[in-house]
Length: 110
Picture (cartoon, rainbow, N blue to C red):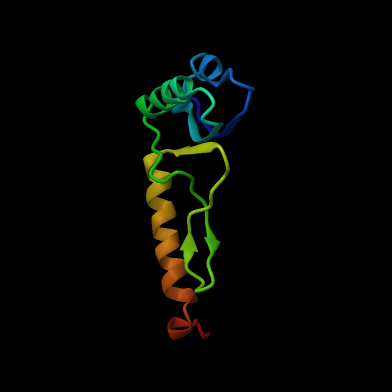
């Protein structure tokens, strides 16, 4: 099956129609507007994407730093971020590595 890295979907309420017309499993990452105006539509979109094997382990994912320099979830307003399981695993590993090696107690010195 062909694979596509990224899909961003914001089509003013027609997200379910569009996501139902493609194979969500072909995408590594999907960001879709789920604004809460139509909760039934948002839930149906969520079901289609998760049944295709993508995960939404957090409301939104990303990597930013809080004041303690720890990676934190990034909120993309009114959106859901879905990823293939392998990408979620890679994200968690990267966040743990970042947390370990960016703290002052574990500074890298060549």
